[in-house]
Length: 242
Figure 1: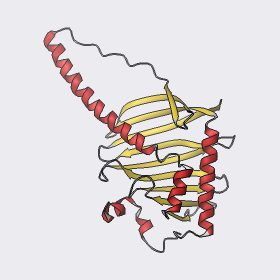
Figure 2: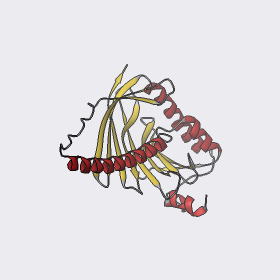
Figure 3: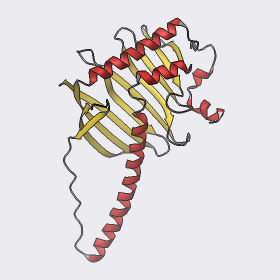
Figure 4: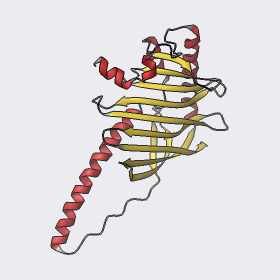
């Protein structure tokens, strides 16, 4: 991976000295990392006791192409298990005329091909981002051991700080975690990654919310596949303990 690629993906302010970022493994930074790891592990354990509703909207060049709703819970492996809440799609009516029927089939084939392409691309970027959200305790520990975490205050917000992690999943990627010490939870994530080629950038913003029980969870997630102008907007709601 070239130095140019790494610089393209890591936030600019991280490359500038004097930005209030602490890279050295000092005790204060180690404490911050420990807080985030503890919060991530505790929330993952708590989330296993909940079900919730997930709405997924896929848009291509600003036009919504698909809207889905799922009932979600974590499986024994700790990964989300989803059950569709939507009614099956009805097949489109076709023309009775022979020529019209052939023309309709050609048109439907083209539409289906394009649909397959963007849905496959959407699945790829969703699978990629599942490696980042939520942050895993073990992955954070590995990043800390490699010296890939920088810490700094959240500008203008008392009681919050940010951790910037480079090379978290892929060489040259970055993830910024905003953490709130009062509620002992993650406030937001900002992720810059890519698929197989660094030119195929994937940018993500994630916001977290807290339940009265103390559970902190992803409330909204926006994933942008830059090269194809594809956006996946995810909203989670209706959290209920099982």
